[in-house]
Length: 386
Image (cartoon, rainbow, N blue to C red; front, side, top):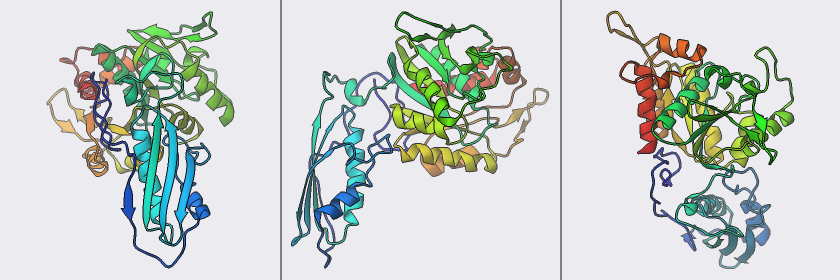
């Protein structure tokens, strides 16, 4: 199974079968840096490396114990750093290499830098071609994608629900996890009031509807019951939804994130091996401003952006066929070009989208020949599978 391009920010498909070759795993690299009258010390190098984050986490490579030895020749300005890490993901050493070279270039007096990587398989594991591409840390799940936005009101949950349905319709085993604890909507959108139960392994068994495995706080509460918890408790609930749910052999798990860049989002992006993120926006600039913040958050923790979905893109008048750009035109396309990622799709405003959501029947279940919105979601799913 192949994931997207190794270059961050380029939204390639990640659901194809067949392993892709590693683009780059550094074992040693020299960079010549202009000479300086300063004489670098080992502490200077350690201080610089303290700014190198382990991809996907906020902690640095020193606190993770990856730096095994530092050799500094103060007279010549030559530096050798020995690093050791256990991973099957070729992106991890590449991203560490890029960050380390950037910070070491800035150390006064450093001329030549050599980084030696000792890359091992994780303990107790046997690396296969598929494993080397990276594996989600959620049991029972092969790939994880997050659907996020920088603000509320752009239809993110509607997009996440219909994207999950469209991926399922393409033949994949799909799960959908509603991570918006304070405003859960997945239960209503799928028209079920079932209550999940616990199996013998003390795991929560997800609700199944329309061929999808679903989990949401909405399944645990009445419609009128609010979730009144502080950030730490909310993140604990989120971790339970992700790791204590009996997800059953999923090809992909879609995470419907809350709007913004708060505690829950940071917990997810820092502790779950996300294969990519999809950003939802509407065409107007006020929505794009916040969408950029969501993109920045994912990029800071090295989560690739698979692409942008422009929701409520236009209204197609059923009477005369005239297209009306109610919220502006071209915002999502312009932003996708600026970021260098695909514009995955433009979802039109349709009465049926609202009606189907209220009735617990996502529009992507409809015949795409009869609904432009359903066709748009099916086309997006097809792009992610290419």
